[in-house]
Image (cartoon, rainbow, N blue to C red; front, side, top):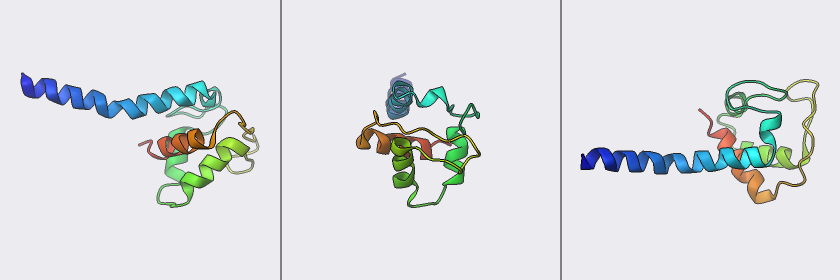
Length: 101
């Protein structure tokens, strides 16, 4: 029983950052155009992670795109600038997106 409780506690603790960053993505309105596993208006976070897998500069690139926006990478619909997102939050969001399995 002790082992099961300990395993459950660590499992919930490990989910903490993922849940917190999903909440951050929701708070910063990322989920208005994106979803974790399916294309909405913009690409899914899963597709973004797959495209940039192995790219060491991807975190900084995505953090910049989150704030400044971009166009032409995923089709004709541009991503608008998100000036309300701080640099620290954009880096946290980029890392979370890139860690999407």
